[in-house]
Image (cartoon, rainbow, N blue to C red; front, top):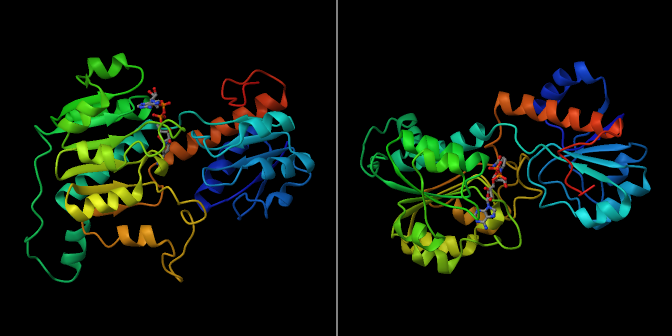
Length: 331
Ligand code: NAI
């Protein structure tokens, strides 16, 4: 099948070229991300391969359908950015990669926690400038601390196990309990209790209308003073302006984010020549106790290989009219 592959980066191409040796699909790698302007590049392509920050709203879906597209293969887990109703109306199937490496994201969440706690990002810069002073670099033992995991699906469950390995008391909140997390030693509590008791709060639930700004001024006020907040899930879970106010007051002591609510069109691009144009994100980067990564939690060799394998398997199933468990358009 001819596939228009939007937003190609060198690492995508390497992983998909390797996997495609077994599938032999006609992949046309395109650099721009999918938007209203770039959708015509998919004219004549029955399949489009798209990533998290592409624009897949009703206008784009209609434009893709007009060009002959009948399948959108998401090479990511989240599909909150896709207008599924528009896809259904246009007769476009949507498939995704529900799991490719929960370990990759979970380990990145831990990397943010450890770097923020032990101030590795600051120590790195100091040593490069010949400054071996330790002032301001005091951290805390993870062992014995209380960590709250919000969302205990595939990634959250890995985070629970990693935190238990550090000797943390782990609290959990989810709309449905995961027995694996209970047997790993997590204690399920209502969200308000988790927020009140946790030294670290890490978010692993999906972005949906009910979870938009799950962490805002009210929930921040319920947390322990000086709490560490980590978000590797979706930017919209955090009310960023409220978090900035909480950082300024000291209510939030550390913030680690891999996702940002206005990241679309900014993350995955090299904007070093122009600087950060988003004033809210620019403000965040001025805090010494804030660590921002540009949606890289998924980026491991293993995850990229799994993403390519599952995406191409999904496409082959749809091409052969076979049932595909990874369809999200309620076929
Ligand atoms: P999953 O579907 O296995 O787990 C999500 C969990 O959240 C489920 O247990 C679900 O019951 C729970 N949940 C749903 N609504 C909730 C609510 N209101 N409050 C608390 N929990 C709720 O998903 P998985 O694979 O663990 O991924 C979690 C999220 O991580 C994804 O939704 C995605 O946004 C994000 N992600 C981020 C990546 C990155 O590179 N930064 C890469 C992959 C995923």
